[in-house]
Amino acid sequence: MTMQPARRKALLIAAAMGGGAALAVVGKPTRRLADERPPVKLEAVFPERFAGWQVAPTAGALVRPSDETGKIYGIYDQVLERVYVGPAGERVMLSVAYGTEQSVGLQVHRPEICYPGGGFKVSELTRLTLPIGGRELPVTRLFATQPGRAEPITYWTVLGDTVEGSSRSFRWRQILSGLRGQILDGMLVRVSTLDTQLDRAYAQQARFANDLVAAVDPAMRVRVIGKAAPV
Image 1 (cartoon, rainbow, N blue to C red):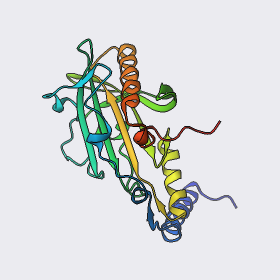
Image 2: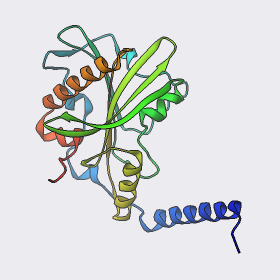
Image 3: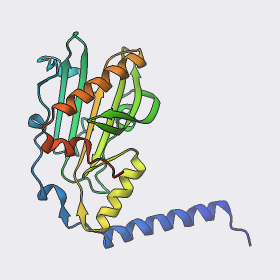
């Protein structure tokens, strides 16, 4: 007898819920990676001056997208928001969010999710790798727009010591680490500019990101771009 589509869907949902409950019980984390290594202080990790860039003292309001709830970054222990001015007067916005507990129930808020919540339209979503910090780093690009604001964005997320290129791989690694009894910390690094010319904006962001990572203390660099994948 052929199963009806509605019944099949209900059984799949029930199975998924049961699997999630089992993981919650069997893999309840008991150990935090953040407690086993030096603490992260974002203001110290990311320098205010480097390679001709310096922080603009009165431009912080340019960084955060509109958000009436005020809860976009509520899950994080620390958030750093700055606007940097480059050698030619160009401006780049940096937003970094760090959490000591990136458990399955405490997900990183990716721009393609949080920007629409702030009234933006998101398009041109692309996954790629960029030469940052002496290696090819998985990043995501997208274009967020609303009346009066056009914001190309480049960002990446680090879970533990690994850069995760997609939300699926991020969540899967959270689950696997939970099964091992470990809670990984996580960081989201977002670089953006106000520009309607995407090629120009992304080239500027790539240059800024590479300069920024090169200026981070080597001892903390793994927290910002993870470890290089084994060859």
